[in-house]
Amino acid sequence: MYLSPGTGKVTVNKREFETFFPDQFDRQAVMSPLVTVEMVDRFDINANVNGGGHSGQAGAIRHAIARALVALDESLKSPLRRDGHMTRDPRMVERKKYGQKKARKRFQFSKR
Image 1 (cartoon, rainbow, N blue to C red):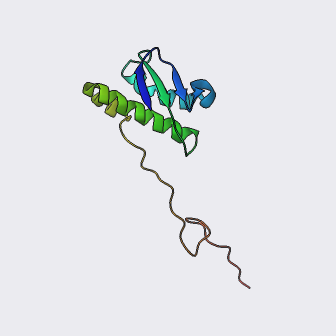
Image 2 (cartoon, rainbow, N blue to C red):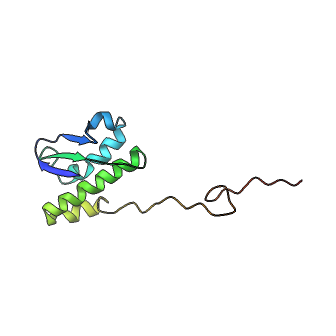
């Protein structure tokens, strides 16, 4: 993720922001760190993401933007942490266990 001085143009995986995230909720999530510190039109963002779904990718970009802003100005850490942008989402996929079809699903039981 690259944060450079500019006019507020956002590019994700070499595609325009609105075409990569058609959902308004995901676009708001990505822009929320910049809205929190009132710097929406001061930086251009070029992000590359892979894996997960659209919501997870939006959360990853949001977290990266918040960390980049703190790297530029340490005084922004407090408002970003207050709004929850500095905390990584710890949820991970649970591993498949042996003797089961999936992580928690069992094999089909047959009485006879």
